[in-house]
Length: 311
Image (cartoon, rainbow, N blue to C red; front, side, top):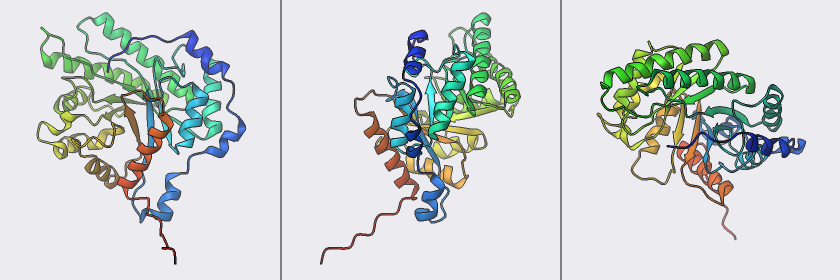
């Protein structure tokens, strides 16, 4: 996904001007997955479900995100850079504390920060800039009590050997992962980019990073997951390093959503499964409710209600 690195003062003023979320928001805390499992899950492992602010919530400020995500009973949010919420690395210490207070007060987890940091450029100065920016996002995540920072590969430059670029990406992420580990945060590499999203290439990046313990994978639910030996083979290659999951519209029939959810349940996945819905809408809350409802049904943790026919 492409975008411009914009945002700044206007976005920051937007969420600060909106003020504190009312204490009553605490009453809207999402029903915890464990409670659902106890009542109707039949012992199934219940996954954490959330959403990325790209693109359904891109125009929502912090109070609106909290209001709508809690109304949709979502467990967490990945805040995408450049969006109206204004949660950016330029925030002051006081602003960071205020953002954290608002989310924690409402019981909604800031479960990820979605950056556009990437490391494939043939220009060393550009790569270094992205590495240093990633470290700033790591610090922001630490300040917000957020567990992960999402980064991405985004291409293979022409006239540069593929293996050299894959090694460069891997080594760059290793440096970022080391900084993240020191801060108690994880780097989540999104399986992204027209060429770089192929799973065997992601595996090579991980290998070139010496499988650093701070380097995790954001499974991105791409059509290319079905190539190179198929979904099951590709999932197995990354299974032990999947730290979070991005999911598209669950009505998309050319992707094995049920197998993905089953696999995550079987491995007792503790990360977040985020709806990353690419289209904007004027009915975002309703869309998020539909996503969560379909997701829970596919998990098999919501039992159909017992209906007594009228006499």
